[in-house]
Length: 191
Image 1 (spheres, rainbow, N blue to C red):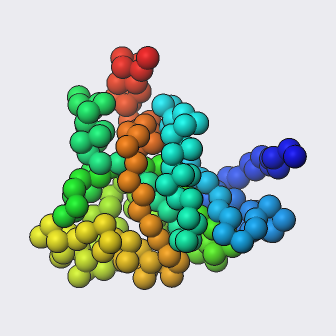
Image 2: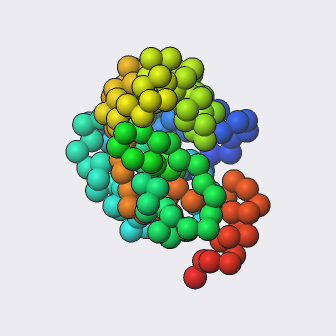
C-alpha cells in the first residue's frame, strides 16, 4: 500500500506553517487510527538519518501522550561537537539541548494555535518561555530544582495536552543550522 504524500506550500511564520499542517492532517481522518501521531522536524537537520528517526519513534512507541518532544543531553552533544557553542537548558536532571523531532496527535493539537506559537517562538529560549508560563517553575529553575517530570507536568498543564520529553542519544537531532558558524562547523567536521 503506498504511503499517502501531500506537499503543502504555506506562507508565514514557522508556527503558522506547523498549525496549517496540523489542520490539514486533522482533516485526513482516514490517515489516522486511534493513537496515531504525526512526526514533525522543526529545523533544518543536515545530519539526520533514518535510523535516528527510527530510534525516536521506537522511544515514543507507546503513544500514551499527545505530544512528544526530543531533547539531547549536553554530554552527548559535546562528545560529538566539543568545539561548537550551543544552548542548553539546565535542570536538576542534567543539561539538555532542544531536539527538533516532535511527535504529536494532530486531532488533539488542531485547536492549539497559541500553544504552537508559544512553543515555536520560545524553542531557543527555554528559560524565558518558562518564566512567561509559570513564575513558580521559573524560580525552581533558577535554583536548579526543576526536573524533567516538572517540565512535562508544566507543559501538560499549560497546553492542556499530555506531554513527554524524550531523551535522545543522537546529537544530530539537535544540530540545526541557525547561525553561519554552524554551517562552517558542518563543512569542517561532517564526513
